[in-house]
Image 1 (tube, rainbow, N blue to C red):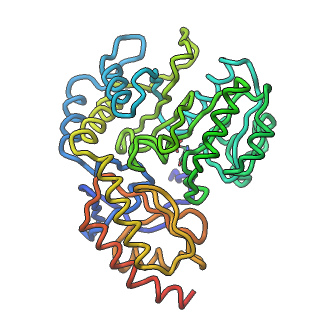
Image 2 (cartoon, rainbow, N blue to C red):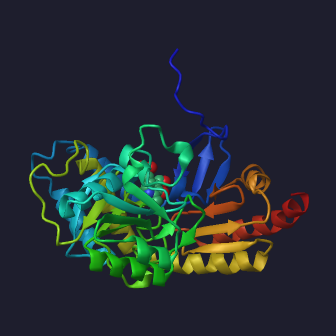
Image 3 (tube, rainbow, N blue to C red):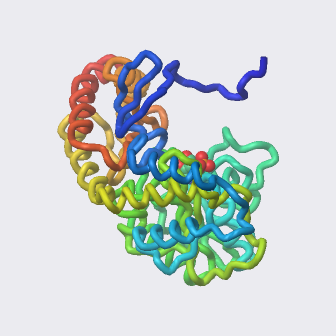
Length: 380
Ligand code: PLP
């Protein structure tokens, strides 16, 4: 019998049905999803409009190669440009966050002909060769690693950015909010310094918005709080609400040429139908506004519960760092309160719920947190 080459699942729970912010397992037990399958479920599980649009697409045409016209790609680019506030940017479509970052790095190097990359400590950009080379995590970097071209600077450190971005720098790649690294938000000053240094040196500024983008923070991209415009923005996760799709938003200063970037599956009919449905729902249901409001509601509620060391994030990208390992707390939330949460390091609970989460779900979480935090912190 063939075996799967992985160490998952972490938990012996199999969700077989989902709706909105809820999942049901094989025994019919209901779980509240505050993790969104790792920031992927943006508009809610099995949203009826999303299901209808994908079903319709499946029944007409699900795939043909990029050698033919696919109007859905244009519709997606237009709607994404309008909702994100980048209507003059171009869209390259691919299949994942790592692939989006690979293509952004390549595009930067094609553009200015340089090879040196600046990335940041605790940053995460994916697991394929180029993406992992700019990721600061030795445990997932293979001996064949390509990071001889990469310097890792301290995150949010303006001085080292000033000193290290030079005329030799090809690109600077940074997450607007570090996700896996622990929910650390870029300061305005840091992002503005990166933008200015890239302008002065001709380096390309890449904002990895795979996790912190797509409306999660209440703005379409988290860097929009700092008033800067990157040259390239990468995205995936929430873009397809579970259907694999990734993309790079590309400044008008880049010119496409035949064969420069490409992929077999990127921009296929089903992925684009999912992408268009997500944007339609986000707009129709005001999900950016909901993310901002519910984010504030959750942040206030968590502050009231207390017991943590530091509370970080923006909107519905929330990191609660405790002064003790959170495994016991997370297990209690999962097994006793039936709530999925994420982690970011040993001491930090990470919340990445659907952008459509409501007060009822937020209150249920806050009640469970209040009941458990004191107990667990005493034990821990
Ligand atoms: N960039 C960031 C910020 C991420 O959080 C992730 C995944 O967690 C990636 C890139 C990689 O995305 P994917 O797993 O779709 O390749």
